[in-house]
Each structure stands twice: as structure tokens, then as C-alpha cells.
Length: 450
Image 1 (cartoon, rainbow, N blue to C red):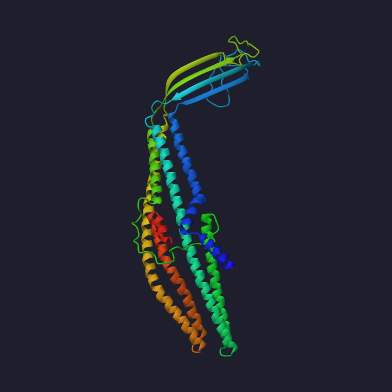
Image 2 (tube, helix red, strand yellow; image 1 turned 60 degrees about the vertical axis):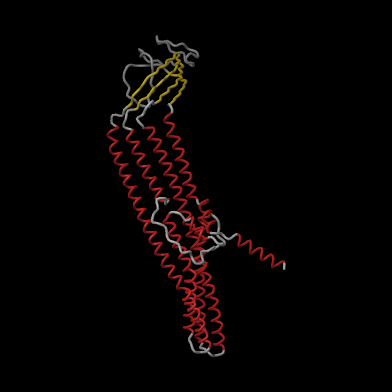
């Protein structure tokens, strides 16, 4: 009695641990790395908005330095470069190797009081990039969820094929035993025994292939969920599918369409940035600084630690205008590039709409055809079973051949596979329709068991 109770408990535990379709989809969405990548990209895009908004803040630069250097200054112009350090003060009459301390400290503040909408358009472009990243994350989640649901159905189909193959090999073993007994009694030729063993080997090969397909299907789902797949719960997926109407083609809320629409908006936002970038840049600027030196205007030096601390200061307040005179030359080709990008993204949107419409039409055709097949397969299965029973009986009575028995067994195995997969094919068509519609939530709810 204790053994029976333990077995029932273990059986209940195993059943409780069977993975449902809803669990498989949720685990895939929670664990698959591509979603994590999309999530971090969305986080980076959100941070980009905060970065763009900092352009409204004044720019504050602080500098400080101490040096020991010579003071040999000369007349003449030096073109801007980054190698020769600038030097201030009057030119000397002759070079000397003596050096003095020097120091400097300063603060510069610059702020744009107006920018003709450039900063606003830059922030809007960053917000568009964030919306595009969010839409890409949702589309990735949807793709992973649909892949998990498809893999789940593939496992069910493989399991049903394995069951039919197991039943087929059991029937082949029964026939092999019958043939062996008849051959031993010299009621049948020895060739029938060889043929029976060949049919048994063929049935075994079919079972091996079915189990291989099942292992591959489980590996595909395990790749998405991040955990090995031991057992799954079919729910209603092996029963007759509900008679529902496929949704309308390519709704506007499909994740792929939303992502592509966001991509178009991002391009248009960048175009606005270009439209506002041609205007001059105005800055209110304020600067204060102090410098120290150990050199005197008469070319003598003060010596000691003089110059280590600033001893002269200046301040200033002003208004500046900056305008790139050649920027207009690059603006036109940059606009043409963005216009081409917009046309490209628009074409992709049209392609997605066309593909989704075609996918939904194919799903409807698949559902209709699968329903018709599902209505026929029960009769075909009954006929195959009757044929296999009659062929075996005729062979036992010496009125039929082993070829007829083998053929009837193969027909029965195939009819059992077709019968179990026909209903599943309707569910697969419903899943395809749900994918084309942009949401599989309703499909998951319909597939749940009672």
C-alpha cells in the first residue's frame, strides 16, 4: 500500500512539473538573452534623453596649473596647433636658460539664451530613439514568445509521432511472433520470417527517427527557456480546436509595425535636428582667471617660490556669435541622406504590412485545410484499423500474404499519426494567425486545459 501511495505521489509530482504552453512562453520571455540585449539598449536610449537635456544647462569649465618654464618670448604669428605651448609677455632680446615658476587658475561659463529650437529638436530626437528602442524590445519579446509557442507545438507533434511509432513497433513484434510460430510449424515459408524481421527493423527505424525529432524539438525549446525540457502539458492542444475566426490582417498594433513606425519617427526627428542646426549659435559668456609668475617685465626674475600662487587676475563678461560659414554646404547632402533613410524605412513598413497580410491569409488557408483533414482522419483511422485486423486474420488463416499485413500496419501507423497531428495542425494554424495579428495571448488562453 505504501508503495502504491508513493508511486501516486511521484506521478502527481511529475504531472505538476510538466511545462505548460503559458509557462514555456513566459520563461522564454524572461530568460532569453536577446531580450536582455534589447532591454539594455532601451535603457541606453533612455539615458540619451537625459544627456540631450543637459544641453539646456550652461557650460562651466575650470582649469588650474602650475609649471616651471623659461620665458623666452618672441614676436610673430604662430598658426593654431597642439605642439608648441603659448607664452605671454614681451619678447626678450636674447634667449636664456633661466626658468621661473608660473601658475594659473580660471573659470569659464557659457550659456545659450536661445538656439532657434536646436536643443528641443535634439531632445525630441533622443526621445524618438528611446521609443524606437522600446518598440524593438517589444518586438523581440514577441518574436521570442512566438518562437517558444511554435517550439512547444513541435514537441507535441513529435511526441504524438513517437507514440504512434511505439504502437507500430509493438504491432510489428506481434506479427513477427505470429510468423515465427507459423514458420516453425512449417505452415509458412521461411522467407516470411525474414520479411517480418525486416518490417520490425523498419518500424524500429521509424521510432528512432521520431525520438530524434522529439529530442531536437525539446532542445529548441530549451534554448529559448534556458532549462531542459523533461515533460510538457498539452492542455487542449490535442483536442478539437475551437471554431474561431482569424483576426483582421496586419493590425496597427503589431509589434513589428510599431517598431518600424518608431524607426520612421526617429528618422524624421533627426531631420528636424538638421533643419535647426544651420542657424548661428549665440552664447552669453563669463570668464575669470588669475595667473602667477616669477618673471618681471624688465626681464629679471624674482626667484624663490614666486609664481607658485596667482598674483594677477582678470574677469570678463560678453556675448559671442558662432556660425560655420561652410556648414550649409554639408547640410543639403545630409538632408538627402536622411530623406533616403526615411524612404527606406517607409518601404520596409510597407513590406512588413504586405508580409503580415500574406501570412494571415496563409494561416486562414492552413486552418481551413487542417479542419477538413481533421474531419476525415477519424474515418481513415477506423478503416486502417479494420484493414490491419482483417489482414492479420487472413494471414493467420492462410488466405493472405505477409505483404498485405505489413502494408496494413504501415497504413494504420500513418493514420494514427495523421489523426493526432490533424487537430494539432488546426492549433498551429491558429497560432500562425495570432502571430500575424500581433498577439498570442488569446491563443494561449484558448490552449489552456480545464
